[in-house]
Image 1 (cartoon, rainbow, N blue to C red):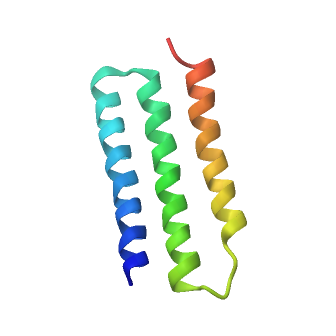
Image 2: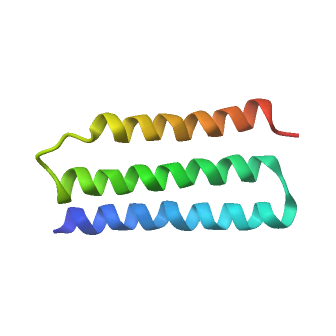
Length: 86
């Protein structure tokens, strides 16, 4: 039960970070905020997949999917920081 609360808090934190970053991007149009916001959206999806993997359907291994989403999210952030920043 406590792990479910922890997973929910991690998911909510990633969602709040994504919302705040994308709202800041809308005001300033800084590319770093855009790529960071996209990264946190992906991390939030990875956390949702973690909840599904551990609590909803523990018989199905969703770890490769979760790790793939996390890798894609981090790749977006690195791409944005290296190639698309001012």
